[in-house]
Image (cartoon, rainbow, N blue to C red):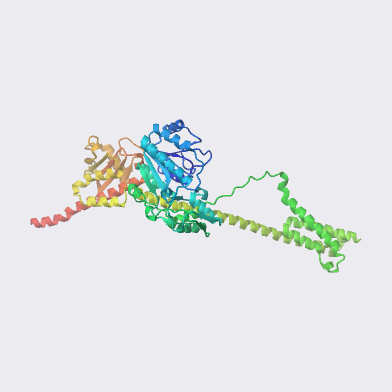
Length: 606
């Protein structure tokens, strides 16, 4: 099926489009947004951006052979009281194009808030106008209209993309108060985006029309609702209850008509697992201003700053040396050694060695000023002690400072790595919850469940042995949704076969005795595997075939022809294998019963 999503981006549209794409359908999007990413990068589909006239929309519909249209009402379905920017010409252009291009289904995503008590807000009035326009097109032009009034949607998305739930969640995280025009006892229904996508998918595939409530059927009081958001945000909520309006009773949030029409069941409830999806929702990134272009001299600024600060400290040291001459208590303090220690401790070994050099030059200058012959330093070892102490102090403290910085950098890198792993685990947990929900939906959605297998077992148990192969045709037809099924019974030597039963469409096409060479080749393949799938589309071979074995020999063959492309999957192969196993069990049981009765009949004859 080819599905068109019309309207601005919203969470329901994104989740539904990706759901259709995963199920093997083609998706397209018609939007006026120029740069918005509509779905994940793995999802592929045609996109028409910008304002479109009815003629352009009609050409787009015909070019992509659209079969279903889903009208998105982002901004109108959830939000504040004020009406967002309206574009009345877009819906008009779409409906005018659909007058000349009939589709199988037209879905309008509306809000359950239209059924709440109290007067309509400007936003809800605009949404009600959209419903009325679609209903007018249904009555006047025969549009196959399906209106879905949805509850509040949430999912693994940024808070600004989740409507009411996202806005409340972000306010709780930031410690702001959450204004609520309702009371704590009013009921609402919160729906996961994945569940909403599964329900829309089923309704479109069943070409349902009319109006349905798309809710979980498990409403929550607003007190419980905000309690779930507190658990997700990890912070207390400050709710300002005004009680200016009211919602509707919990009994009216009924999803029974939707469940009866499609068999849909919601798998994610906000109070159970849904709040974990909100907890793992990505945080909004603050807008960062573009950094100013760096100049070349800024690259040297840390080194120049260290050198300048070292020179300032050296100037302070010279001042203290001059001041210490007049203060008797400072005569026993080596100010130069203190300067070396401070610089090496603050800036590392590089500036520490520079401080050693400056201190040594200062010491030499003080000796020269005191009329001490500098050449005397070369001959007296005692005069080397200050230089050695300066060098050792600067080297040791500089080394320790550098080592401490390296350890801090290593810990910082380790912390960044742990934070990255933590975010990855959060993402994996969210994806696991989505996959779990998707698999549960697929298991329930598949037509052939365990109840069907139980029904097949009951039917086979009630059949007489000669009718088992005849009934196999009907079972496989219902299993594969195929009208071209043939069952052959093998001769005891296994070299030939005869027609046991077939579908009505195959009565004139299936030979009474199949070709010996083709039959031998098929038996050779089935000797290695229980089910044969003609994925290479080899002429003369069935699309799917399975071997029926009894007492260790090949008893019969089940062959299906003219299958659809989706029937070659592993699911249908395994299902055919299970059903053939049930048939083999009943054949063995039917053949063993007469053997057990033969001795009794012989005794009766004697």
